[in-house]
Image (tube, rainbow over all chains, first blue to last red; front, top):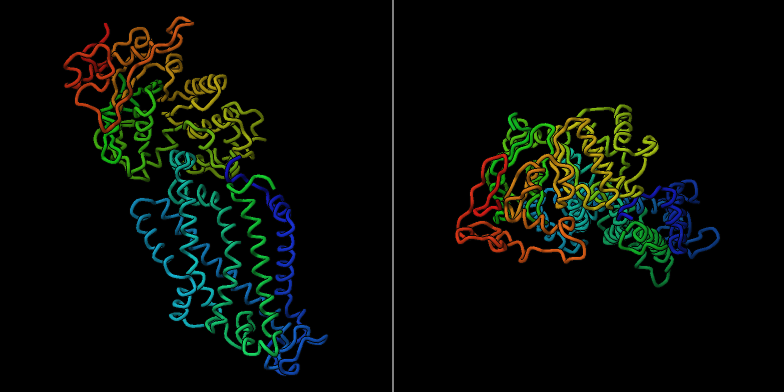
Length: 286
Length: 318
């Protein structure tokens, strides 16, 4: 039927879980989110308490993921780190999605000179490697997990804005926008009521696909020492701290890396499936 | 045509990217009257309709000359809020494609209610009650159950009925119907035209019916205006025009209708093609395809004669 046919949420969820990959992704994601929410209850030790175990102790029954240089329990730190990593990832995506959608929608709707200038500016921003742009922003704003999210979020705006702009252009040409004008609806009303809801499937897909990249990018910034600061437990920062002992205490890197890998993979699996369902050009069959 | 017209279009000219697509088009519609605007694809019918609503996308379209008087008010002088107050409230519009003219993500109840909310400031319950009544009016049975349906759940004819309900929600004085039946089956076409005709009488509104279907015009309209390549070439009361077309283009057009020809014979056609907007000559635009062209036809533009039978032709049929 129409490109953006309405789908009730329950059916959307049922269809999302319809393939093994997306089902596995969803399960991992639920476990991760569950772990993040209940981290204080689940984690056996205080994530920041030092000398709860022997320095760089290998994984054992007491310390399932082993210990780091300061004798902190890695399992507890990963659990607590997931709160920061997932929250920062979500914040990042929220920043690029909201700003990117607004910018893309408005420049396409206004058209003409606004559109031409807007697209040029987006092109300039796109020409910059995202991570370099993020480093630049962090350099200006200062280090920290929140600033890292802001930086990665801003650097993701142009990509979202480009996609939303082209999607809006196809919508603006559709007759229902003309008929909304003919009914006397204001510009703001057309944007809010007629364009935005029709863009939602695309925005949801962009967001879900971007979440994985966002988690990875903010972890990268932390790895480079520009994001979360010690002693905050954060996966990227933990990877960075562990890299000196990779040869004789590989668990200091393996487990944070694994957590990062699982988080990004599960988000991507679900995002991929969502885009398959919501993207009109993807095949109609399941 | 003694009373003041509801809509008067006076020597309207429109250019697209600097190329004139509409030149010196004038016509008027009296309150409650139905005017048919006919012509082949690309002759400027839809541009005329969009210009009246001031909905022509600019750029590329630009109204270069002329006036559009609706109820005595020059639409050209109004700012956007004033225009919005007229659109949908006092002038309703129906588009050609009922498939794409409805927003796919909202229920039809929402969409019919939109102009009631925009113009009448009705709240949820009042808008719903009025919407139900409107759906009844346009002949969608069991209206209450239909309010929550989405456009893709309706047939083409039903969607066009919904479009009509949207256009008529605020009881406009003028309805502009841009090829309202072109995308529909023949049987549904008749139903939709019947519906528009019935509601026209009920609401006492004037209708500007844009179409390329001469049969529809003959049946439905009080007067007919014929357009060719961006110009109005002939305008007369329907009965008069169909009984005795005087412009050679109208004459040729009527000859091509299947009903005007004995069965079994090949239908006549007008040789040649409509010139592109950029290469329209100085004289009568139809002259290159006209079997009755005089030497002056190619060089001099014939003036538009006065009512009741207006035409632009140097060598009209008797």
